[in-house]
Amino acid sequence: MAASRKDSQANLALIAELESAGVLGVTSRKLERWRQAGAAPDIEQESHGRAGSATRWPPHTGRQIAALVGLLKQQLPLRHCPLVLYHLGYPIDFGVLRAGYLEMYEDFAMRGRFVRFP
Image (cartoon, rainbow, N blue to C red):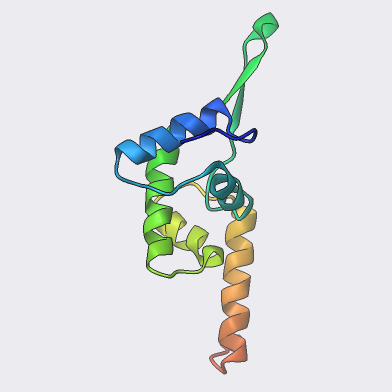
């Protein structure tokens, strides 16, 4: 695989981990899109003092991305994936969960499945 300018060492290491586990087709661009959608965690910045800093993905990220790829292969829309990933035990930002549940509730309301509270 040819590395592009956006391929950080952290991304390349994660992509290699995924490929060795049989999860193919993940790119740095996809990782960023999934991170922005809240389905992948944020990259962590490690300070090395005067030696600079480095970025790394949290330790669970490989498993989370593998689960995400599986959900996407089942045609689940990306906007719904964080809810399922949270249910599977992966850490998802509260704001992302809130937005997902509100969207789901609005979808139910539009379909006439509105729950009325007293």
